[in-house]
Image 1: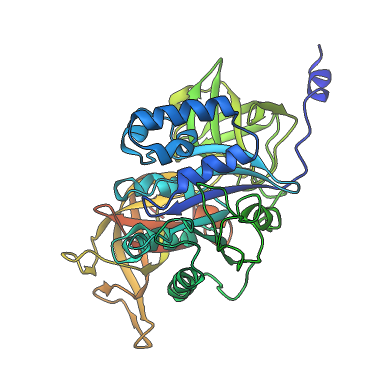
Image 2: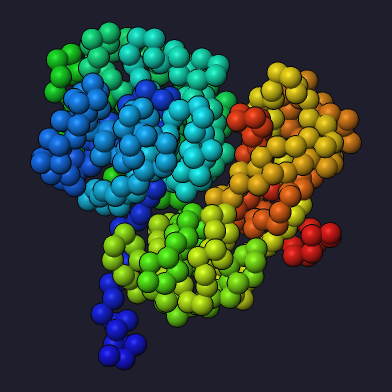
Length: 453
């Protein structure tokens, strides 16, 4: 069969926009259970599998967690009942296609959550309405705050806040409890940069992930009739996809690479279009390759557009040349590779025993799917919003201030300015397992491939 004939038999891309959903929130807020129920209600899990999971959960004395087993696939997760890796699953509404990234909520697993959220378009912030649980998640040190802030930094523009466990005996679908949570969260989300006045940006709704209330169908539980708004599926079906540039040079931050009858790269197309026969370059190592096949889920396609999670079969490369954090780029317009850049930071929460940032401060940089050690080498300008002061060449900067600085990385990384490619230009800084700053890249060295520029 000729290659023209073969390609004509490949599928066209589904015209419905594809969006990545990241479920975030405190460890016990019910993310995996809700995701599992979404899969079940979408007809993607049969009753036999559900019965098997119910038996397994019962054996481990975790009866209410059987739906979570759909998402939590490894033994460590099932034994502990927490999600460690970023689980993935697909479902559809009439006008949209979704991939669920069920991000972990446990404190030790925040780096996994970051790489999940880095690929997300919509955040579903899961809040537990159960007495005491909302307070634990929201108080200082709880995941709710850190996750909401990270979601905004990582480019999640729409946030759906699902107040879960409304069926819990301590809540009983109390409208007062729901209103209290909405009231507490609203100013905090506003401070993270979300436009809380627009339902396009932030949408609150009460749900029961376990019973399925307000997921696909309106709630039928006693006492729930005060809520007259849309279900989660209805909100998702109307969600606006972010602007995606089809004409821009191809950029695919790699999530993973492996061998399967050839070398496969996994990632989300941030801009441009991927098609078989296309010459590409994998950076930072400048490896030249050609896209042999394009897969979305399990099907092979003629091409894939921005926003799609794809697997690419690549020619003439080994698995070790396709690593997490590398970027697959258009060969004629490769992604900039740098070892230093100028950035604007918002210092969110420094460590108690390291309360200031000075020259030489080291941290871990999370940018798209890459994780790299870095050092702040120059402090250029510091703005204190509260005092309304601006200082050139400050000696140090503190929590709450905005800092223009130069950051150097231990190894070469593929990034771009936030203005040119937002997905490759926004980042977080973490220190000792805690997010200390969020930032965007404002300027690269004159020649982006000359580290010493």
